[in-house]
Length: 89
Image 1 (cartoon, helix red, strand yellow):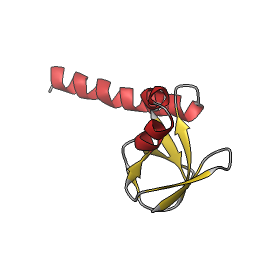
Image 2 (image 1 turned 90 degrees about the horizontal axis):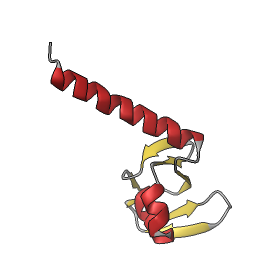
Image 3 (image 1 turned 60 degrees about the horizontal axis):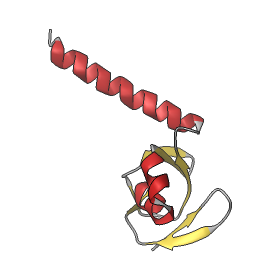
């Protein structure tokens, strides 16, 4: 089991391997649809990366600066892949 601490100081216990997306779903489906990534112990993680140790979490949506940065960064990678696929030379 891992202990997850939320931004408001609340703590909840989850099974090892829980993801930020699973935690968001446990709160609300609406929140889960908005989550882009998560700040885990001060680092931005993919929302589907397993959490295996006690952690502090901040779920990142478009409303947080780190959520926007993550979205833009990921979008830039997708665009680069598309350009390389279209123009392999």
